Image (tube, rainbow, N blue to C red; front, side):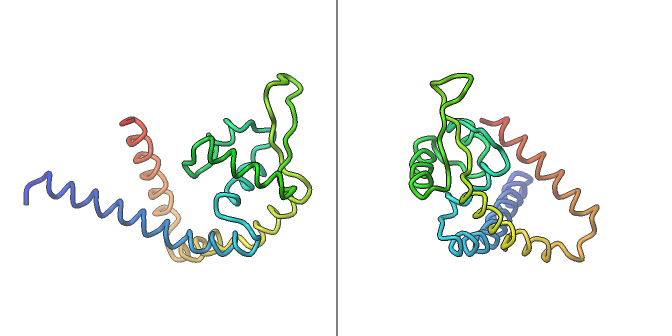
Length: 153
């Protein structure tokens, strides 16, 4: 096996490892979303709006951790507006821009989601017994990988 084959094998192992972590934690996120009567995408928007107030649709699409198109986010936001979870208001600075925020119901759902937080609790338990230096190193390596992948685009 030559050096390129070894590197390719390692790249595949890293990618499969990422997929496994995502799959395992997404099961907990699905449980949280289901208990709130939401989809994972709706929950992701709820979390994004709770931690970033006064977002436009474009800004919301950019800050979300899921890669959804602006039109997909718009459809999900429409549904959340219908359910009185999100409200739309015209910007006071630019009336052409629509600002998105959580309603009182949305804030309550977010608080309930945070108290459930199954994925976070599972990750916390999974990281038990792993040295904090190793966790810091893992996060640093992930940041480098993300930067390198973004540079390829």
